[in-house]
Structure formats: C-alpha cells, structure tokens
Length: 223
Ligand code: DC
Image (cartoon, rainbow, N blue to C red; front, side, top):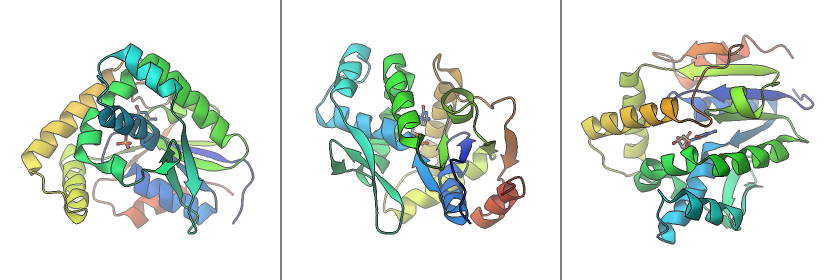
C-alpha cells in the first residue's frame, strides 16, 4: 500500500507505546516514521557531553543553533537520528538522557527550531510522527491524529521491560517516580505541552499488545 503526502500524528505520554505503534503503522502503510522525541534527546546528549548547563536556556538555545540534527535512512527503511552527522540512535536512549531531556523540551526557542525542522523533514514525504505536540502544534492539519494512552502501571511495566532488555538495571519504584515526574513536566510546560488535539482519536493501549494497538489504529484509516 502506498499513499502520497499522508500525515498521521501520534501523541501521548511516555511509555504509552507510541514509538512502537508508529514504527509498525508506518511499515504497514509503506510510509516513513519520524520520531520527534529523538531530536530533543539528541540535543540533550550533546549538551551533556559538552557539560553545558541544561537549565541555562540561552546556552542551550545557542547550542541548538550550531547543531545539526537530522535522520539517515537505514537499509531496512528505518530512520536513525544523527547529531552533527553521528548516528546517536542508541546513545540517546540512556536513562541519563531520558531524565534530562525536559530542559530542551521546555525551552521555547529550541522548540521553535525543532518544529521548523520537523515540518521541513515531512514536507515532501508521507509520515507517521510521534511526540507530544504533533497534532496540536506541528501538524494541525494532519490527515489523522491519534492520542495514545495507557495506565501508568502498564506504562511503567513496559518501560521497565524495555530497559531490562537493553541491559539497564532499574528499580521499578524509581522508574514509576521518574515517569510521574515526566508526565507532570510534559503536561505542565508552557510551550508545546502534551495535550490531546480536539480532533484526535483516543486509543487506550492498556491491555493491548503492539499488534492489537496497530490494528485498532488501522480501523480508522481509510486508504
Ligand atoms: O518520546 P520520548 O520519550 O523520546 O521524548 C523525549 C522527551 O522529549 C520527553 O521529555 C518529551 C519531549 N518531547 C517533546 O517535548 N515534544 C515532542 N514532540 C517529542 C518529545
């Protein structure tokens, strides 16, 4: 199946399954997947490496201005995020980066740059994008908007399993605390907060596996 200039946005809280669902959905529809969280993570990785104070909005914005964040296509068709040309797809998944990315996400000038970059990347191709502000701010005219949600308990459980599989030992109680904190930061930031677009379709993935969630999303998509 191939569709021209088709935009699908998936927004929702951390651990709701957005990225896995987005990747699978893109595959089924033969279109690309844009992981917008990877961009905020990549900038955070650079700031951590350079020991730039993340709560210094001016310094972070200056760093963003001289940083090139892009995506390169892998042989299997997936996109890997690049930081000044370096493939950092794996490095951006560390707990350290995860727990520090809220600084970049709440900095207005950084968000403006990311939003512009996301629109430019998606200009000439069909995409499934996932993030927090995709249906509300970045692509308000998307063909389909979804808000993917799941119970906190299940989101913590999924993240715990993911991290365990990646070889990172984390305490589930600590993970729950971190996730609640991230939820709070995502919902309460002034620019680009996590919010369901008025016309978004809510998909509750609690108790559903990836396939079942993708199937549910697909029931709304008319090709
Ligand atoms: O989806 P994720 O966990 O990779 O997102 C990483 C961080 O970036 C998280 O703190 C939320 C933020 N983010 C954002 O503010 N806007 C987006 N479009 C995507 C992610």
